[in-house]
Image: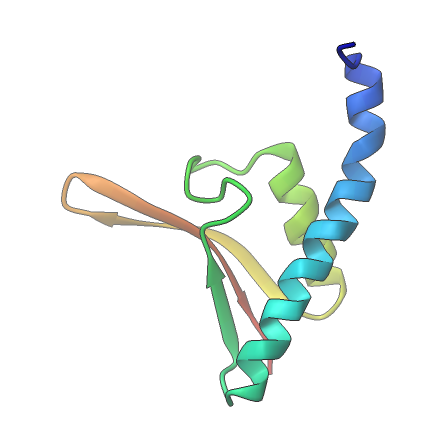
Amino acid sequence: MAMTAEEVRKLIPEKVTQIVEEIINECAKQSKKGLFSYKTYKYEFCIYSESTKLQKEIIKELNSLGFNAVHQCVEKEDEKDCYLFVSWE
C-alpha cells in the first residue's frame, strides 16, 4: 500500500536523524586519520544543484551540532560536481 504525503512528511525527521548519525560516523573516521573534513555524494547530494527539503534538514542538523556543512557544486567545463561537504575544527 502506498504512503500518503502526510505519512512521508512524518518520516523525514526520523530519516534526517539516521542520515546525520551516518555522516557523523564517517566524520569520526576521517578525524581519526587526522583529517578535518568529509565529502560525500550520498543522499542525492550529487543529483541536485539546489538542496532538497531533506538535504536542507540534514545540513541544518549538522550545523546545529557544530559542524560546518554545505551543499557545494563546482562547475567543471560542461558539468557540475555536487556533493555534501562537512568540516570541523
